[in-house]
Image (tube, rainbow, N blue to C red; front, side):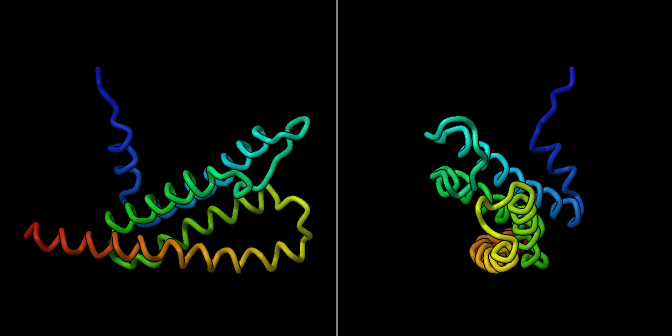
Length: 144
């Protein structure tokens, strides 16, 4: 019987930069959708109501560290042009924001909030990307 290693399968899928970017975008999308549903289920109001992911503390304790780890891992595995990994993740995150909605926010405020949040998250995730890229290059030099 063949054992399937989940991390090995993900690593083989992420063999190209485009596929790595797709995985990061998917991570951002899944974090937003998953925590939006979680926030809706844990609401004290009567019945289920989708909420923004950041309405739950899990977004800051679970979601952001998971996304930071994903960006750092991508930058470690593919250190060349590490600036693109936060952008892929933010693109997926913002796709989740657009799909799930922003509650009572108007369309105009959504257009204003999306680029602002994208810039903030990209800046926040750029640090792990640069650290992962640096570590990947340094460890790569030692291997020779």
